Structures are given as C-alpha cells and as structure tokens.
Image (cartoon, rainbow, N blue to C red; front, side, top):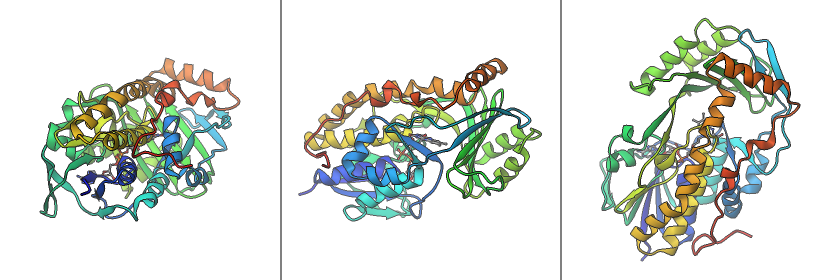
Length: 386
Ligand SMILES: Cc1cc2nc3c(=O)[nH]c(=O)nc-3n(C[C@H](O)[C@H](O)[C@H](O)COP(=O)(O)OP(=O)(O)OC[C@H]3O[C@@H](n4cnc5c(N)ncnc54)[C@H](O)[C@@H]3O)c2cc1C
C-alpha cells in the first residue's frame, strides 16, 4: 500500500514537495488555508541550485517565459532627486518571477496527481501523524510535512512558540499594490533616507508593487498583523517625494502584507512522523532573496531522502544532515541584503550611493557561491527530466 503524506501549505515548498513525493510513490494530500491559488504578487528570485530543481521538474521553460526583465533601476534621495540610474546587469541563468507565477507553475505540475484542498487549515498535529483541521475533521497520515511558512502552525503545534526559533533582523516592512499613476514600466524606483526605504516596482505596465521598509533595532513584539501597518504609516508620515501617496495607499490596501524581517533557526526540523520544509523550518528572510530557492531545494532534498530511506526517522535525519550547510550559508547572506538596499545610517547610505554612482549596470554578482553550494543527488524518487 502507498504511504500517505499530508503537506500543509500550497505556496512554494508544499507543491514542490508534493510533486517529488508523488513521483516517489506516496499518496499525497495538500491542504492550503487560502480559498484559492493566488497569482501575481511580489517578485522573487530563483537561483543556483534551485534552478536545477525547477529544470528537473520540467517547469524551467514556463518560468523563463514569465521572467521579469527590468529596464532600469532608479535610486532617489529624500526629496525624490535622482542619485543614480542604473541599467540591468548581464542576467545569467538566474530567474526573477512573481511569487504567483512560480506558485502557478508548481500547482500546474501537481494538480492532476495529488489531492489539493483549498480553504482547509491544519489546527493541530502530533508526533504520531494525527491531524485536526479547522473543519473539525481528524485524520491520521503516515507522514505530515509543515510547508506552512514563517509563522507555521505545524511548527507551533509540535515544537512550541515561534519566539524560540525566530531571529529578528532589525527591519519591519509592508508590501501592497497601488495604481501605476507614475507611468512606470519594467523599472524599479528606490527612495532612501537613513533607516527608511520606499520602493515602487513596476513588473510590467500594470499596478505597482509598493514596499515600505524601516530599520528598527529593537524587536517588534505586538501582533504584527494588527499593529505593524500603523507603525509603518506613522514612521513614513511627513516624508517627501511620493511617500504621502504611498502611505495613503498602505492605509487602504486590500492586499497588504506586513511583517518583521526575520529568520527561523531550529536545531532540528522533524519530530516523530512530522517534518518541516521551506520557511517553516529555515526562513532566511527577504534580505537574502533566497527564501524561494531554499524552499525549492529543501523540498527536493526531503523528497529525495524519503524516496531512498523507507524508515522515516532515517530519512528525516538524512534530510537535515544533507541540507543544513546549504541553509546556513544562505541564511548568512543576510548582512549583504540589509546594507545595500536599506542602509541604516547616513554614512552607510552615502557609501551605498557613491558605489551606485560609479555603476553603468547592476552587478550580475547578485549570484553568490552560497546559491550553488549544494549539488543535487539523483535518487530513487527524484529522477531528472530530460
Ligand atoms: C517581500 C518579500 C520578498 C521576497 N523576495 C524573495 C526573493 O527575492 N527571493 C526568494 O527566493 N524569496 C523571496 N521571498 C521569500 C519567499 O516568498 C518565501 O521564502 C517562500 O515563499 C517560502 O515558501 P514556503 O512555501 O515555504 O512558505 P510560504 O510561501 O510562506 O507559504 C506557506 C503557505 O502555507 C499556507 N498556510 C499557512 N498556515 C496554514 C495552515 N495552518 N493550514 C493550511 N495552510 C496554511 C499559507 O497560506 C501559504 O500558502 C520574499 C518574501 C517576501 C515577504
């Protein structure tokens, strides 16, 4: 009989894992608390080893078709004056796509093969694989995998409160869409003052992705979903350029995503019959730009371990052993991200601006050794697509 596995979360790591576990002969069920798959969304990068994962899944050509190629990056000072205007870099193999385009490609790769339940939420799970859903149903699976993101319910249910694993990185951010009244097309405008950054990102000609990020050294404690909008709005109030319009849009945004920048660091990613994958286990934060790549590579490595080791205890141990160094290297990239995009002091901002003024094109050195630090195995379940 097929072994049953429940995957909680259908964003990036969940469907990627579902794809490989189905190929390895598991009966896969995926639950997702959102009512439906969401398209669009902010842009994310897929780099290095993760490119090989999507290639082996056969979705690389589709993703290349949705690759976002920006024409220009403009950096602005407090009053909106131009500090630097920089063209795109050489490109290379890395991909930048919207989170929704990646999620849609992954979903299309699994929807005919696994049971996908939208609008269902995991409430509790125990080490033996007994799961209670919000609907009140209780089911038992051979294995349960939490792919439910940074604020994972699976993790909390099994390992306890998030605080013990969360490493705050000193920034709070808000992301939302707003009308493109600026006439921007395939470009990024980035406004900075020390400790504050505002970005308008035009993926195409349509709505803009607006980002407001603030530096806040002391950890932010209260309920992020309720209070952070207000913190961001009041911090940016009174600033120049187009900030007032952005703050207004933030206050009324229907698709607001607001959180603190942080990492999840756990001594172990599994307990009993339950394991974690992606942001739930090792979120690196958006400052590294590696969250989706870790989610894809983590899903592949977990499926590979389960496909080659019939004993799940051995499989989970192998997953941790083989992936840990890759995770550690990528989480360590965080310092670069913060300093370049969000300088916290006047001196750091001036250094960054001096560097930008000397550039004709964005450095293609966004590719770092950590991105490709793992070579994927070719195992029993994870046969490559030719
Ligand atoms: C602003 C921003 C920019 C980013 N930029 C980049 C980038 O450039 N490059 C990059 O690689 N990464 C980037 N990331 C990170 C990336 O989005 C995440 O790391 C990645 O999506 C992690 O995937 P995941 O599937 O593990 O978790 P998530 O994408 O968080 O998905 C978790 C899923 O689980 C569902 N869920 C949660 N709880 C439950 C429950 N109890 N029951 C059922 N379902 C549940 C959620 O609805 C969600 O669909 C960025 C993130 C942000 C916020």
